[in-house]
Amino acid sequence: MSSGSHALVEFEGVNKYFGDVHVLKDVTLEVERQEVAVVIGPSGSGKSTLLRCTNRLEEIQSGEIRLGGDAISAPDADVNRLRQRVGMVFQSFNLFPHMTAIENIMIGPTEVKGVPEAQARERAESLLDDVGLDNQADSYPHELSGGQQQRVAIARALAMDPEVMLFDEVTSALDPELVGEVLDVMRDLAEEGMTMLVVTHEMGFAREVGDTITLMSDGRIAERTPADQFFDQPRTDRGKEFLRRLL
Amino acid sequence: MSDAYSEESTGEGPDFLDDDAVVRRIGELIAGLFTLSVLGFLAWILATQVDYRLLRSVFPRFVEAFRLVVFIVVVSSVASVSLGTLMGLARISSSPLTGRIAKGYVEFFRGTPLLFQLFVIFFGIPRLWPPGQFPIGDWRVPAAIIGLTLNHIAYVAEAVRGGVGAVEDGQLEAARSLGMSKVQAMRKIVLPQAWRNALPAIGNDQIILVKDTSLLTVIAIPEIMSVFRNINSNQLDPWTPLVWVCLFYLLVTMSMSLAVSILERRADWSADDEVGGLRGLLSSIGKGLGRRL
Image (cartoon, rainbow over all chains, first blue to last red; front, side, top):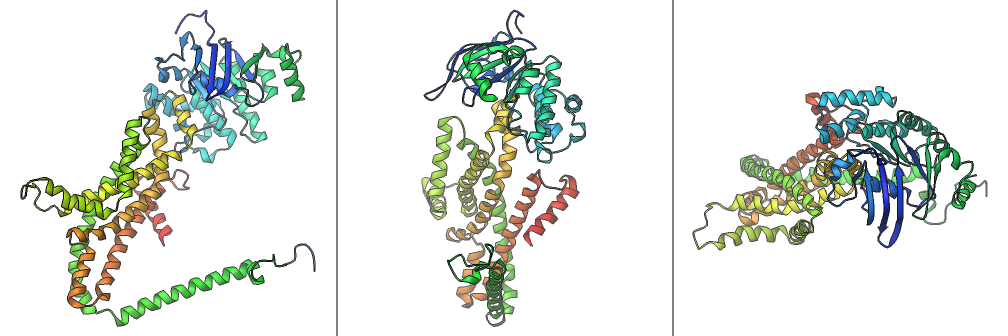
């Protein structure tokens, strides 16, 4: 890993097209170590795409994305190795339905990093404990509630010991009464100093846990402000408009 | 006219069809009559048309044919399922060359009759050697196995392709996000799910494979239908040998579908019972039988 002078995640002049549609327009963004960067904005503004480019689930057409100084977007980058350093949690959980909760968490370390089975199991047990599911190790995903599934998915991503975690609207598919338990886990994670890029519609969470708010609008970063400032006095008209619509 | 929920006819069809219980009774009546007439017909055939002495005396000839058919089915089945799985993977390969070659294969073998394919292999291939030089003495059984296998690879491939297609995109994305290579993600995450999705279609195809062995009579294989034809033309008695034909095919196809439902159960991770070890196997056999009967 490279020098500490870099931000952990850097976007520099990133452009992304889906066919003719220009979804990310000249995006430049730096996320510092231990920062909780909350990305908000209307749907279709490019928030999820921004996240998916960070671990190269989507390719970009120009610009550069770096992780700890290493160009993740370079054509010759070792994608599989770089992805191990980026954990991702999805809106639809995407747990592996043919594996139990603990197997879901162990498969990354054993398959990708070659961690011995026993060691992976021990770590998975402690992660399950962290997300409050130590009694569900042998449950299959279909036996778990949405909130429990999402917590297993977070543990699965953490098992790879990533440097940064991406959260892509992770509470949007949940029943309202299950949202809290997932946000609690994310709050704990933030307090432990994990670097997080969070796309969410949960403004309470954004305000309380977020360090910075990045407002996206029409593929551009419209505003990037410390969280405590954004909700009281946004700097841009876009920000003001977004907050007005929220109320 | 009474209240809004009255049993008023909706306008189309006779009024009594609005009553679920009546429709259900009518269904049961039709099903019952159908079953009765089939059973009656069978009983009448067995009572008047079947010569039981002949039935007993031709049994060994059917057993011999049956053993040959089972041998051909087992070999072609194992070969077509394993090679067909590979062909299905080739079909969805990200390499356009591999994908197109596999597509061409599937189009050809699904698009021409099995009979034609058997003729090409049985009659055509040996003629590529000078007369008398073809190295295999009895080409019938090998030709049959090769023909059935090549044909059913195409159908298994399509089932596997469909099974992979039915796995959500998010599964591959989640696997790749953990840093798995494409091959690791396919092997550990996508294929186990795809296999479960494809199993019913593969099972269906393998039952058709069993019945396809009846075509082998045209390349002089002494299978079950050819035994029937011999007996029928010698004795002028179709019904007696047809009893054995029916029982033997049903024996193979029903064991086949039992095997498939056992495999389906074992691949079903949302099943309520624990599967694993001998007890798991026995319980899935029981459940499989339960589903059959």
